[in-house]
Every structure is written in C-alpha cells, then in structure tokens.
Length: 401
Length: 99
Image (cartoon, rainbow over all chains, first blue to last red; front, side, top):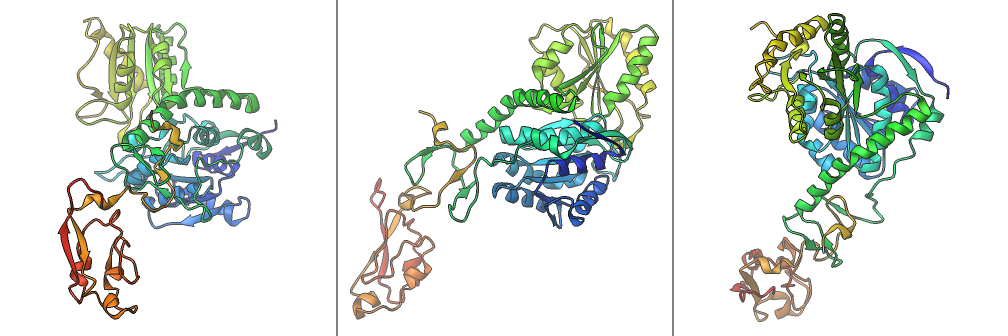
C-alpha cells in the first residue's frame, strides 16, 4: 500500500476519486461551487490521463440523461452538480434510481433560491431525499475521495445510485492534506462494472415502458412486475444496502487503512449530551464539544455519514443512553423542522430512549457556524430540559431575526 | 406466486408481438370490410392500401384481400375514415370478446 499525500481541495478530491474509479463516461454542467470538479475531470480526459468520454451538455437534466443512457449500455458513469443544478436533475434522479442504475453523483452542497445565493447549506440534497438515491455526507476532503470510490462499489452491488454530498466552499474550495490511493489498490478494491441489464442492438429490449399497476404476462408468457412491485424492489434494495455499505467500509479499511461506517462518533463513550450534525458541520461540532468538555459538560458528537437509507439501528444504539440530543441542521423542511432531527425522532420511537431533543437550524446560505455558537446553543437549551419537555414543537433558528 | 421470479429489477422486457397485452379488447368497435367495394379486392391487384398505411397499430395487412388482426385492433376507426371506397364500416364488438 503506497499512498501519496497531496494538499488539495474537495473538488479535486472528488475528481481524483472518479478518476481512480476509472469512470468511462462523464456528463456534467458547470455550476458554482462544483465547477472546478468538472474542469479537473475534463482536463484529465483531455490530457489522456483518464480513458473516458466527457460529454458536454446544455443542462443538468441532460447530464443525468447522458449518464443513465451510458450506464444502461454498460459504462461506469459519473456526474456532479450543486443546488439549482440538482433541482433541475430532479426528474432524472427518479429515472436513474427507478431503473436501478449504479451512477455516482457528487453533490457540492449549496443553498437554493430564492433569493439567489451561491454559498453552502444542505437544502439541495435534502430536497432530493425521496428520489431513491443513497445519500452520503463527507466531513473532510479525505472522506470525499474515499467515499466516491466506495460509492461505486456500493452502487454496483445493490444497483442503487449514490449521491456523495460535501459542503460547498467549506470543503469544495478548502485545501487540506489528502492521502491519494494508487491505481493498483483501487483496482483491487473496485472490480469492473457489471450491469444488471444491458441495452445491446443484438438483443433489443424495452425499458420503463408504461407499466400498469398490476402484474401482467409479457410476450413470452412470464408474469412480470406491475409498477408497485418495481417500486417495492427499490425500497428493499435501499433497506438491504446498509449491510453492503458496512461491508464496503470493512473492505476499504483493510486495503487503505481508513475506517468507514454509517456514523462518526466522537467522545460518545460517557456522553450524556450528544450533538448531532451531518457533513462538515460535524467537525465544527467536535470543536464545540471540546469547549463544552473543558467547562465540565459531558458532551459527545454523533456525525451522520449516511442519510439515505437512514441508519436507524446504529442511531438508536448510539443515542439510547443520552439525556439530551441537540440536532443541528443546515436544512429545513418548511413548516416542520430540520430533516435529520425528524429522522432521529423517528428512529428513536419505541426504543425506550428518554432523551430530550432540541433542533437548531444553522448555517443557511453560507451563514458562518462557529464552534462557540454551537456550544452556546447547547448551553442555552440545558435549563429547558429540566421541565420534562422532551420535544419542542419547532426548531430554533440561530440567526438575527 | 409473486413476480420476483421474472428476474428483473427494473421495468424491462423484450420487444415482441403482444408485449402490451392483447389490445384488441380495449375497443368497442371493430372494422368490417366490404370486399365488393375494397379496391385491391375488386381489381385483384395491389393498389390503394390506405388502411394499411394509416393504421396506427400496424394491424392491417397489405394483402389481397386486406385483413385486420382483431386481436390487436383497438377499434380507432381511422381505416374507415381514410378508405376512399367507403368499404370499411365500424361495427360494435361483442362484449367480452378480444376480437
């Protein structure tokens, strides 16, 4: 195992991850803050360092249409986008997952309009929660690179596309040391893509024709799925993908020495106050937790790596003994609360957990989230825990209104 | 028995006659051809075939006499509209028949 440490930003880490995964087709439309990633990939192709077709497209909808077409004729395909680009892909996200095509998409998290904003929050990918894609969030640039490689292995095993999400600017444009695996090791880890079905002129097929609700006999007299059966299989694949994601992490640590699971835990062993966050926010939460520890609070951090499928069992096991759970969300389901907070409450139902849960909306549209603000929000909430109110109806916004 | 044994994980099939099921039972009417008026039959030579050309389901044959595959004819009536000899009339299907 020989790895070379490079000082690179998150976009370059994602580009190197795609190159090391030997992607064969790339179709992407540039959008802030993802642009340097697509530029890097087109340079790799132009210089002959990556044997792939780079398809220039006129929109994100077309980018994903190219990738789904490439995938169904047997090519490993990659795309990347942000914010409005991802929103524009929305329809094709459903088509890719519904056809069970193992694409990998890097989502460089950016706020969604209105009003216009190009800075970071996680509203873009959270808004695509129900499209049937696996969603992973990276905390730093090393995790971006490693997750792209793992994403192909996972996607091609369970035939579900994977979105690797990382925070715009905070990661995409910030340089940090990243150990870049060598090609030989990645080839050992990631075998060539084997499609579950292939469109071949010598063996013509129909895909995704109008499929009625009920099962029916096809032209050969075989009883085939109705719409609901196909949709059930997608749900089943996501449910079962948890095992594959864990197993892929195990295989990765053996070859590369970096350990991956569904969650990240920091100081959780004796924690009774747990800060929960997703993406780079989890790193800021660790700094906040260290401040609180110095002041005598028993805090820990639970970082969510996987958002879909939601790792319910692991979340319950990690949070069962906590007294207070402070969930920080860089997104909001308007009229309700932060998306990860809802997931955690849902996971804990029936588990016997007696923790009070508080939800904070932070960092929308690139608003800075400092460790001190996180620590202060935790401390401010502690007195309210003594009044036995486990739940609060709506989240608190950390802003100046 | 469930549908899992078909082995597909997405909407997938091979193109073939009847892939969409026997669509003949979708319609309420079917064409009836009067061979005494139909030009190819009357002249006993290949001619006209407007019904074959215009049929959106490709179920009209380019033969003498012209034949309609009623297992797949949805009864749209376009053939009756385009027939220059007015040799085709749409007649009610028997209820429950696929032809």
